[in-house]
Image (tube, helix red, strand yellow):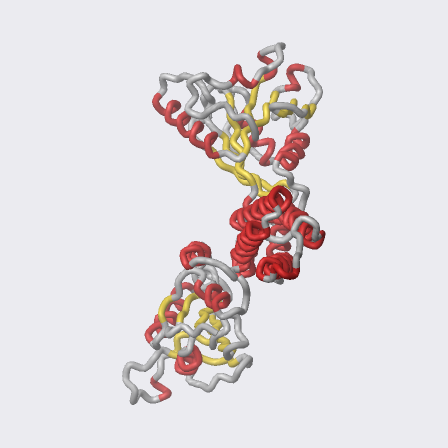
Length: 463
């Protein structure tokens, strides 16, 4: 167990007023600090109710002269049976920001230091209480934007994702041992091309990683969602489409061209998947400096978007609309070849029926004003990113997990190619090692200090 030389403390409850406020202390001085603040002997896993005292500046101060800051419950969890694996004390008092700050100052004065963001969880990871994927699931659970996302994060925290990765890693390790043994002991005369255990083992691993990728992708979509930019010419109905997707009047809609001059952001949920919608200024040449700035920002958002909804006023033309004619030749962003949907708006004026037409690009005929066809657009957005909903087996995952799984799969596929084309056991062994290392990055068995710093810095202080 890693034992840091210092003791950390922080307020573990959200800022602001509340019925209960908690100060968490972890480290070798946690028990002594807790006993000084409460002036009593703290028993393990026992709720002690009583006053929290201000530390006496004068050591000869009489008991009846001590200043009481608050009163509440003190809990002591001895190492290693605590969240961090260290001695942990929690002081649970009233949730006023002033009284919590006064109490925290006494804890710091007694020998603790203020914890960094995520440092409690980081110590739990370093002390082997949880792995890295479980640590990240804690932050995902706190940040969950939907019930489905919370359930997925809880499954990851309980170890579902880690168990799946560990099963793969063990299978990969067994195959590595067999391959490397064949290399080290050539007198056994194992033929890499004819031994089906090797080729079948690699194929099974590729299939298993691919299945895990698909499940992890659903979890990543639940956590991160997608960013969708609504773009098009003025008065095409972009703001009306934002309002229709959001289910409320979030953007101002008028008949005056150029009403939207700045970026407007809204987040909605589609079957639990966060959808970050961005409404932008109409794309046109304008002499107005304010509108020009809005258009410049629109192109910036288009360049960063995961998906673009290019809105067209279908009531203005009877001719089929081509994507190329809608994109300015001198646009600062190249014409997208994927992840763009052509939205033929105002079908209530043209008399056309709402429809969803696959193709390049995909076309959705709808009416943002009446809402006809909006469900078709929602279904299309889910299909465009491969989101199938939050099933019972979905777990929380991050983009770095997807990247690690992709690298593992590529290494396995490269190894399979080396085996088939050249019968090269040494090259296959190296590819298996690279794939095994990529899996280890997910749970933290293989990681770098800068990655840990990046992950835990995104946590809230006190967690």
